[in-house]
Each structure stands twice: as structure tokens, then as C-alpha cells.
Image (cartoon, one colour):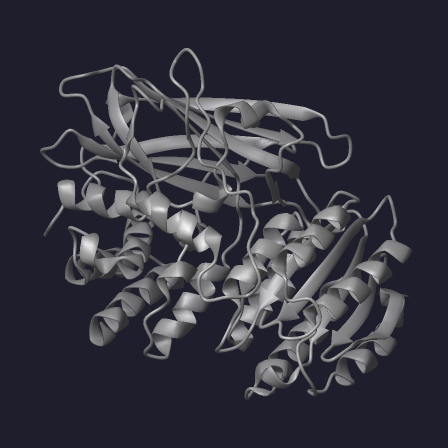
Length: 492
């Protein structure tokens, strides 16, 4: 079994870059992704920036004591890679975002008593070495459907020719029908379809008229190209026209993200969704299909103050549309950010796993005009750090702080938690909490798939850990993880 330096190298290379900034006296700016992707192409500047971030050295605490990033609850990267592996294909490295893999898995963080966050910080040592893994977990309070405010939901459904893939549009229609059963009488829904042009199939309709909405869903049929711009414009127009200040207003795009008509210049689309997000109309992107425009859908969600998910089966669609979406329609926090300050006398260097395109400078943490992430009820966000410790050093390792704004008043709040070196579990594989071990395996697997030549651990070692954890866990996703690692071994 290969541990120690190999694991730190694996975690680090899966995610170097992070949000670096500052010394103990003055924060220095990090490399910040300005979210300016170009026209659709095979290699965007964002991908190039993230590759450069992965190739950078680790963050020495004497030069980069502070790590800052916007929270992210997306899970689409894991969902699409899971489908790709099951089909016997190796995921494209640019589509692997380790933080989305970790955030796709269930955590066991305590919930706060109010509408803020709890901050959970723990970690574990790597046997025989001055190295460790640290986990920062952030959790919001869940809510029951009966507690939430009413919702205005505008569904923008791709019916272009590419949606003719067997079962793809049927999956979308089935998911929408199931969601209509879950929404409350005070909710309202509108439905827009798009191919060469966009069509309004149902204007904003109360859920008391479900039959009308069901008929609109049944009218969805495949034809034409993918004019995503037309769909977004029509969807946001409908959402804006029916905007209710006392409701949650959201546009939900269901598409493969393969825009080929209208404006395919990403910045024009991103600017449009960002403008509406500023008017409290948020976005959820739901990806479908064997071929999937991952980067565009992820950037739309980021700029639209929303999240990106991917579904490939009836089971996944039912989970998203009948369980997760109804419970998380509203928001707990806007522009949420995390900042971790490391103790230079104990931590020699660190690497943040993932979050390359969510990095912020230290100064932007309390700049409430700077975009953060939007987090709904019952969501957990996890960040893993690979640490090199100073030999024999003892004391506080780091302090993690989350800052967010109230969704309605925009009042800012913060809460923090710290971790001491003596609180680290003695061994990541023997003494650490099971959920931490799972998170480490998930992040390591993502890193291996993204750049397998650089890693000190192999798929055999990861498979051993995953199978051991699956044998003692009742979580089917852990068993699936072990299966996916075995699948990757067979196609590498």
C-alpha cells in the first residue's frame, strides 16, 4: 500500500493553485479566473489557466499564508465522468473538477440551528511523515418543503436534434412530470422549449393547474439545432415578467450544452445570466446526454448564481427532481466564500484540492461586491488540503472562516473554526473518520484521472481503499466508487 508522499503528491497535483494570497502582514493577490471563456473551442483560456494552476508549485506559507475561494455546490463533473467510465471511456481531463466529485458524496457534518453555516475542520496524518490531509466542511440547515417560500420556476428545455439520443428527451420529460407532483400549490411553473428558435409552451402557471403543465411537457418533441441563446433569452424574459419578490425565482435549463446556433460566444451568454442573477433570478443547469458541453453549462451556473448537475438515468433524475430540487429551491446564502489562514510556524506548505476556477484573493473575501457561491438548504461544501508540516511543530494548524450574505437583506455574516495539530487523527487510513477517508479516495481518484502520469499512487491502491470502505459502508455511492475505480483499471 502506497501512502505518505505519494498521497500528498496525488492530492496536491489534483488541485494545486487554490486561492493563494498574502503573508501575515499583507495579502498578495492570487491568480483569479476572470470567467472570460471565448467562443466554443477545444481549449479555452480557463482550461489553460487551470492547467497552469495544477502545474504550479505548492503554496509555501511564508509567501502564501491565506487560501480564499468561492463556495461551489456543483456536482456535474462527477455525474458526467461516472457515465463516461460506465461506458468504457476515459473522462476528458479538462472536465474533471475534484471539488465537484467530493461534493457529490454525502457528508455527516452537523447542521447549524439557524440559517447560517456550521464549520467543521478535521484531518489526519500520513503514517511516518510530517504530512497530513485537512478537511474543511461547511453545512447549511435543511428545510422541509412546507417551510419554504413559494417558487417561480421557468424550465428551459433543449429539444434540438442532439436530444434525439435514445431516452434523452424521455428522461427530461419524465423528470419534469415527477417534479410537478412534488411542488406545492403556491408554486408556479412556466415551460420554454428551444431548438432553432424558442417557444413558450406554458406561461407562468399555478400548480393548481397541473394538467395544463403536464400537457405542455408532453408537447416536447425533438427537431432542429441548438439555439441556447434563444432559449435563455425567452426563459429569462418569462421569469422576469412573472417575478414575485416574495418567491424564489429560478430558471432551470435542461440541455446537453452543445450550442451551435444563435450566439455561441460564451461571454455574451454569461453576461446575460449574470445580469439576471443580480436581479435575483438564479439558474440551475441540468446536463444530459452522452456528448455534453460541460464547461459551458458549468460556467452558466457559476455566473447565474446557481449550480450545475448532470443526470444520465431515471434513478438520478428522480433523485434530483423529486428529492433534492424541491427541498433546495430557495437559498440559505448568497456570495458565500471561504478563507483558510495557515499557521506558518506549524504548516510549511499546503495545496487546495480543486476550486481552481473559484479562486479569490485575500482582499476579496470581505469585498461583498465580489461574486461568491450560492448555497441552498441542507447543502454541504467540502475542501481538502494536502499539508506539509514542520518537523516537531505543535499548535494551531489553521483557522477556516466562511462569509456569506443573507439572500434577502444582503447582510453579511461570518463564522469560524480552527484545528490544532494535536487534533489530527494519527493515520488517515486507520484512525480517521470514514467519511474523511472516502473524501480522500474520491479526490485522489479524480486527480488520477485528470493527470495519471504525475501521481504517486496507482488505481490498485485506490481500489483497495475503496473496496475496504464499501465493505463497511451502507452508502451505495461508496460501492459505486469502488466499481468505477475497477472500471478505470480496465480501460486505462
